Amino acid sequence: MKQKIAYALLLIATASLLTFSCRKGNPETNSHNQQTKTFSSDVIKKWLGVQLPLLYSPAVSYGVNAGRYMAYCGVAAYEAVVPGMPTYQSLYGQLNEMPQMPQTEPGKAYHWPTCANAALAEMTRRLFTFTPATTDAVQKLEDELNVSYAKEIGDTAIFERSKAFGLAVAEAVFTWSTSDHPWTAWPALVLTDHSPGRWWPENNNPTIANGLAYWGDTRSMVAGSIDNVTSVPYAYNDADITSPYYKDFKEIYDVSKNLSYDQKRLAKYYDDPAVNGYPSGASYIPVFKQILEQQNPALDIAAFAYAKTGMSLFDATIGSMKAKFHFMQERPFQFIRRVIEPSSDPATWWKPFIVTPPHPDFPANHATFAAAFAESLNTIFGDKVPFTNSTYKGQLVDLGNGPEDMGSYSYKSFSEFANAIAISRVYGGIHTRHAVEEGAKQGMKIAQNINSKVKFRRE
Image (cartoon, rainbow, N blue to C red; front, side, top):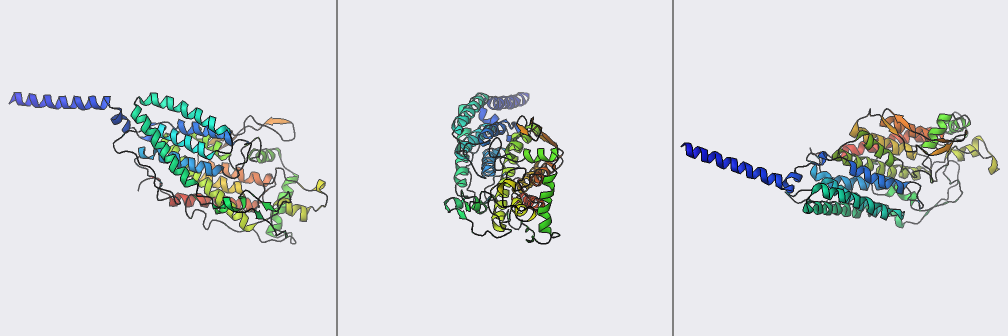
């Protein structure tokens, strides 16, 4: 009897030893158990780092595409690593016309940073086509990370499988992206209504090219995200100085006459100029990178934040442009030059502190973008998260006392950051307060719609 018991114990011990040996020597088994959350978010930070110089002061304009790039890159990064996130799920079936994503092989191991690297390399390569610098920058980082990850994994099969999966995800997401903008083949919009209260470009060119007027018809990331989110401008009235319309524009004029140093600095910091800056709302991408660096989340939360914040920024862009070209409200320079301080001599015309963008006033784009961006971040990191924005630290600007460093801004929350951006447009003289306040409400509603409609976590 004792011999049988001893023999049985020997068999159990042997089996346990064999199992342990197999697990120890089998990278497939070990790596497959490594969830996305066990890795740092360095791969996403590094790819954002590659994209930022491409977005900064480009030789060729990319229009209002920055939010679009962030959204599709974010979704690709998320889908490339979500199989390693047991409590999260694919966005297939939730996003607007999104195709089914490639599947991982059951029981096979994947290295999630390698998957993300392949996905973001391909997305950057395929989307950032407005500058010739893209190809070299992408190849350099992709190769650098692949060398590091291959060494870290120590198993060729896992490495190659991970690369292939990430690439397959990127190809599916990019193909989906190509069907989102039906306005590309439309003719330019030619303005004909020059009546008071209607927007007219400052350069007096009635032709609005490059699809800008039709951006609002772009397919949104989330169906219904921009529905019923827009209020209306004040009713036009240039005769009654007590009317909301008149007072709205008169405030811009009054503020412009007594701008403080702090107001000028804020207006310039968030100007997003065409040169020496991040144009067309692209400044939200370096801000997002800084938030990741300061919060330092693991790869799972970073990918989740990348996708959700990008989607909110993209849909806010669509919603804002759609409303702008629906209402066609005039810009402050038009009303002020026509009603408050009329002059037939261009040399004496009233001028805003920063350059007026070539599209209508209501709602204010950046107020809409910033509110959607901030609200999305609030749902991920919380609404009382302090952070510092150093996007233009080191860049010089002359505010009247000679060149000086634009420096940084520190905020107690993402909402405080959004509010600063919104009011900066009033200080800059390019938007009325009503356009700013209602734009902020619209952006917040868009982000809230996305939050209620899209379920990242499994229920």
